[in-house]
Structures are given as C-alpha cells and as structure tokens.
Length: 252
Image (cartoon, rainbow, N blue to C red; front, side):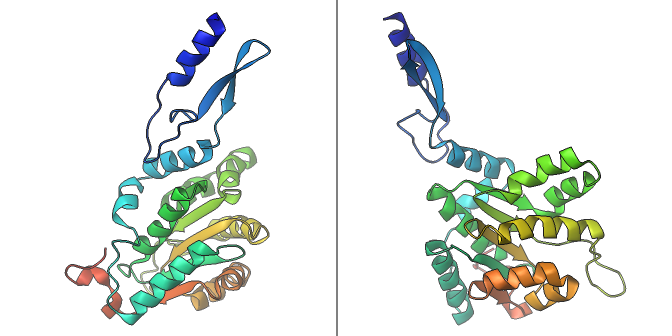
C-alpha cells in the first residue's frame, strides 16, 4: 500500500505544459509503474515531442512558432500561393523529399519554414532546429576533436525532422560579393546532408539565400543531393519586388 501511495504521488506530479497536454505523464515526459513491487520509471511517448519543443524554444525560435503559421500567412500574389501550396503538400507527404526555400532576405523563407516546423511538431515529430551561422560555427570549431564533433553533429544527422536555417550563410567577399565558404562548411554540409540523403525517411527543411544553381556551382556533391530531394518541393524566390519587409502589412 505504501508503494501504491508513493506511485500515485509521483504520477500526479505536474510537468510543464509546452502547448500540448499529455494525460499519461502529466507533462513530465516520464511516468511510474509498479514492477515486481518496485516503483519503476518509464519514458513517456510524448518525450521526443516535448524535447523538440524545448529545443525550439531554447534556440530562440519559440515565439516565431506562434507568429509564423500557415493560417496567418497572407498570400496575395500567385507566387505566394504556389509557395504555400508546395509547403502544405510537403507536410502531407514528406517521405523521400526535402523542402528547400531559396530566396533573398525578406522573401518569407523564415515564415514558410517555421510554419512547416510547427506543423511537424504538432504532428508529434521530434524536430531539431539548426541555425547555420551559430550552430554550424560551434560544430566546425570542434572539427578536429572527433568525439566532440560527433556529439554535436549526430543528433542533427539522426533527427526525425531537421530545419536548417540560412544554410551555408557566411561572410561575403568584399570584391565579388559571394560567400566565403570554407572547407569546414563543405565538410559539415556533406556529413550532415549525405547521411540524411541516405535515410529518406528523415524530414529535412532548408532555407538558404543561395539558388539551387549556386549550390551546384559551389559544391556539386552537396548541391546534387539537395536538388534530387527537392525537385518538386523547392521554392525559389528572387527579386526585390518579392521582399515582404519592404511592403506594409505583409508577412515578415
């Protein structure tokens, strides 16, 4: 009876509500059962999703998950409607495909990709967010320390769903205006995307200021993998007339 009482107290303990409620573990991510008379801890099926939401919030993307949704996206122009249709289609059937959005700053890449990330989180997918400039920098700094490098990259490689923001973004050359992409960038990009290319069940979302042609020119091995996986699900937005930040009352 004492163990049953303790079991009830442990299971009744409330965890943090992260936008969805789990009656199995009361939002803790784990629950307890009696096994051979002993209180035993079990991981709840909601934990991967719970960890994903925490990771997104810690990454600084949390508030954007509420603002950037398909529902509040304003699609007035034909190209916006086409982009929205591709994003929704990808969400319904992502197997073997990647959603890639290429475009200038302000073209709506963040809105589309964050909306997709949010939908997959709601669907229970364990999603990780990678901001290339920040997370990529940390991983590249550990490139000569194999254990540290693997600890950082493996969770991204194996993530059920991965959103890479500003893929391959780096400082621009003052003369050519092109990105100064390093060997470390190439190694990280290939290691990460080659693994996911060979595991088509993994969901991949990529935003980048580079076009598919530019990606192919920069590195054919990486660019060809992106092209193959996104032939029907790539959105390319170019032109200052498509910079939403220059318009009033438009999407960010």
